Image 1 (spheres, helix red, strand yellow):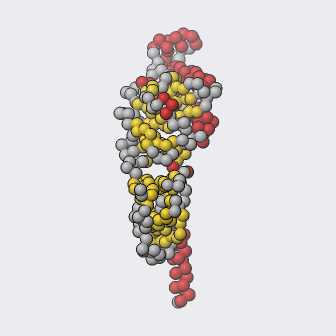
Image 2 (cartoon, helix red, strand yellow):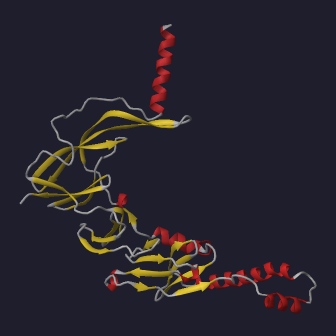
Image 3 (cartoon, one colour):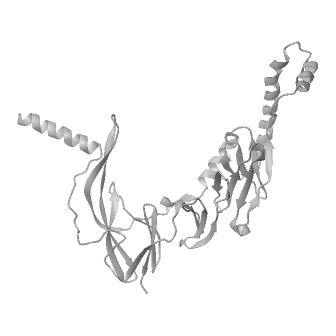
Length: 314
């Protein structure tokens, strides 16, 4: 009987471990406060005065949205350079690696859609992008059909010639798109039917009646590899002097589920000759907080969706 109970116990342990369950402990440092509280009153930890989401960056700048969807352009120290209000009615946007923001404003008819941009080089002045429309006709006229019947000397029904005309026009459009690939540097998709094509000395918005990005597959892949980097590529782990698992949360359905352990990461940060400590709430033994920027007198931390300045008090 003892052997059976031991076997059952081992099975349960295996199931828990395979589902992410971890053994829980008591808080190892109850005397240390939970972030953003900390142990050194000579150091200040303050939350950013503005909310940031969708944070991306290049070598010079950080780009993000606020809670209203407006664009924020900051330097790499996260000082605000410009706030660009979300244009009324815009639906899609793309930020290129050089920090140019392209956005689409839809109209009732897709061929009337307008594409604009904000550029750092042009001091964020709103500019309209020239458009190139490559679309087949909405319909086929009786004259189209009659001309085709007369030219081909056919006795078939006029309606059966509609697909022939569309196929001919789609072929012509495909040939025109192939010519656009010559010297193309980047392509920025805004919607299934609209993309910005960028060349060395010009750019324009291509409008078609279908998703044309597959025609530029190689250039699109190159553009994506060279785009802005997401914020987690910038994150660095803080100095940790231990972790603790306080509990396990379960999530799943009737068929599959798993545990996510949660607890604290014990963190130590230093500015000049001052050091402070705190406990950062985490899950799956993560950092809880991550460093986005650090110099001798300033640290910027990312705590889930909130950012904090850490400086010495004056």
